Length: 167
Image (tube, rainbow, N blue to C red; front, top):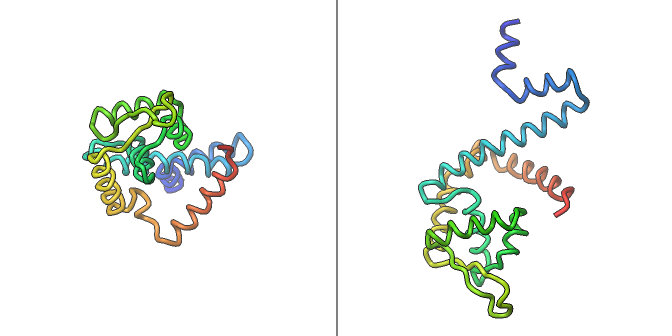
């Protein structure tokens, strides 16, 4: 009995799933949900440990990365909002912090003065390149524990979830 209790305490997801199954339907769905949420949290912590010394967090990294993927190095604020699936005020906050750090600048869209473009600066391009290299060298946090086949399967499963979610 003591060994069974120790096993449950060692894995809080399994203990939560066991408790769920005693009261509610679909314990496997619950186990998957809790595993995803806890895995996400652990991964973000590890990724941010790599990014923090560069003055970035995962959200700022995402903005810089989006801009770096554009040939022009610029995107309208609202396009960033749509790509990140966040509220417009969150994008404003992120861009303000990146602008204060000299990593982006805001300019008026030459085609539509009502639109504010966020443009990657040279310092921003250098920072995102360094951050991307360091993140890859660190194995993308928790993902370093998985081999290429496991990463492919995980990407496929998460892709199926994304396809089921309206944008």
